[in-house]
Every structure is written in C-alpha cells, then in structure tokens.
Image (tube, rainbow, N blue to C red; front, side, top):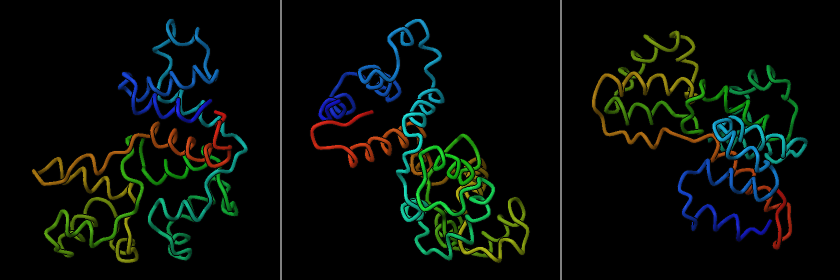
Length: 212
C-alpha cells in the first residue's frame, strides 16, 4: 500500500473519526474483510483493531528498550530498572532488548494502571507539586501518603509512575477547579499503537510501498 494513500486517509479524507480511518485503511490493505464492515460494524471495536495490529506485528520486535526508556522519560538505565524491572519480570521479558508491540502494550498497561490511558511519561515530584500544589512539597507528600503510597515507599521515590499520578490527578480534578488541560492527560491507545506500527513499517520498507 502506498504511503501517500495512508497519509491522505488520515489527514485529507472526509473520514473524521480515527477508528473509521483505521478500518478503511485495513480494509484496503485486505487486513479485514468487507463482510466484517457493514453487518458487523459494531464488532469492529478499538479492542478488535488493536488486536489486529498486534497480530500483524507478531514476532516483529519494533521497539528497543532504549526507545521504551525515552517513551516513559527515564533514559537512565539504573533509574528505569529501579521502577520497571519488577513489571518486566512479571511479564517474563526482563532480558529483552527489543519488544513486539503487544509486549509494549502490556508494559504500558501496567504503567497506566487502567484502560483509561493518559500520558506515557513518568512524573517528577516537582512537576506534580508545581502544577497541583502551588509548589508545596509538604502538601504533595501529605496527599500522596494519605491516599496512594505508604510513607516509606513515597520517600524512596523520585518519580511517580503514571498509574499512581493519575489517581492523584483524578482526586485533585474531582475536588477542585484547576488550570489543567485534560488533553495533557489523555492518550488514545488505538492511535498510539497504529501510528507506532505505521512508523516502524515505514522504516522497514522501501520508500515506494509499505506492507500492513
């Protein structure tokens, strides 16, 4: 499939809903059958489309551990290992130097803590303190240790994983009006993995065609 066609569907077509764009591209690429589109349109959920992306990228290790560290904003190996080795061990991929997209999904699913994904990068205590507590670290500590961490765990952390930060943000945004843009804390799973898949497909194909 020509790259220009994919770009035209995403940016220039009259199809505004991203899920419908992905369905159309997958149909043209013979990834999903025509029979699945109209009679079974309600079955073409975000979960289904994600599963197709994961199936298409099986055994293709697209994302390096270095890129994963950049994605979560923990480029130092030691720091990354401190926060993520336990999760990678549970998934059985501690020694992997590269990950297939489904493995990346499992890591980020733990990182996010729910199906309601938000930003990928970890938070520093300073960022949360400045944005939500007027720079008061003591108030941040009180909020965090009352509702999310025990005292010792919080003290031993310089960074807060998104899963924990989102609980804190949810509590703050539900209790008071603030200047936080909700878009800063929202990440669509389908668009993230589709664009990631597309990016690596482009990198691994010639300039004329990409196979999806």
